[in-house]
Length: 603
Image 1 (cartoon, rainbow, N blue to C red):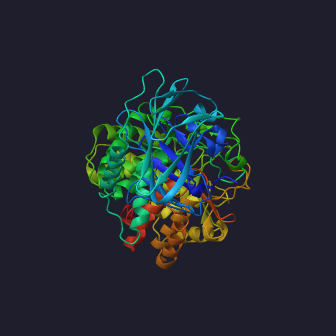
Image 2: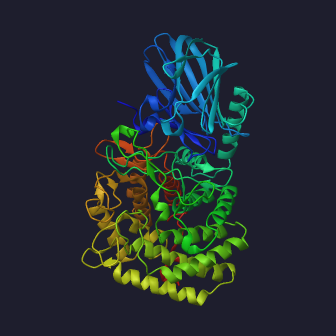
């Protein structure tokens, strides 16, 4: 049996990422960008689709691993009958081309080691042309080339590159893999020790700038490091996850490519980064947004490439077996072509938060907001595909209408509280019409809850956001009864489901894990409604699901007791950070996007 999702560690140079398994194998690596083709794709196939393992030759008695301090430098220790070794992995922030540095150190005794490199470009499909060079090998196919420099002698074997070596206490061996365009000469060799030092210094300095709550400092800082690691530094774009096609249900079809910048996910990430004091990262994302969505608001996409590319066309890779036979494996995401009304509200809301938290008002950003607000005012009555990006028919999703209200509400406040020029009376009137519509048709009297779409009777966990965005105050009986209905009907072994997938809503086969952010939202709602002890208990249960490195995926399967979905997932770590801030305040969420003073009752 292969590795479970929680068996992986995460490396990043803030331009791409790698997943390293507990047994020292890099099973996922896309170069040069997050959304590039993978040269190691064992995660979604077999060894023959690409991997790079460094491990003891003999039986490993015990394995332990950790990140070095508050960094993304991964240290794995192997203990054998002959001694102990440490494998250190990192991706240095690049000067020009991406590198992976791997260092093996002897801690005790003398351990026989082995390394095997299977390079396969284009998602594990292309066997490259490999040749020896001084100090290592080069491999190239099409536009991609890699040079692997090693302190260990390497040799070819069965379309792979292998090497055997021994390591004694106090000794070390280094390996440096560098990607470069195949039409260029190989870059100069990197000094592995200097690369490790610079990487340690960068991450330590970055993480020291945060202001995490003391009680859950470790969980919050690790989550913030993940979010920074999912940021594409050249543009400021933030990807939703480092992977594609890790299944929401093992063996199922809900396998999507998350290596793109979702406006919704990125805005939630910005809340977390802003709340932690990272204004420079917030400014970088705001600039990315202005470039990405330039043009007509009607052409705004739900997601973009890390450079702002559109659209992100979806196709399948039938030659990959899929993670634990979960097919299909998809590249690209057809949701980029969907109309999702809620995204407009998310974007306008995060712009509002940047002003509240002291970012300088940007004239171009306000012009963009005005265009988006105008679009929402004209189109809020249209059906859309919703926050869950359904593949069934468009509907009048209640959450989408609520976020249209958020768009109009924050636009009004931009005029009232920040003196920005706009059509406040007109926007206020639209805001009130949306609010009345949602309350009249989005609340089902028989169920005693706000429901998934207007005039329906289906429940949806996205409606837990009602008090969090200030649509209604936490004291409103309709809010409390909606929370109760979610707890009664959408809880599965202590976790909140998004909705029941056995309905005809999303156009997909039923079955998935519990989407982790929904359970964090429930903890926030418990906290808001005075159930602090219950909120705390749920939150601590959720953070206990992190793997030994503090990482979360998109979902959790309570039956199998394992993480599912793409990994690591920005949305899950954002929800953790925000809930920790909320609970630390005790009296209500610090990261709440609209407290009672901004809710509908205070107009």
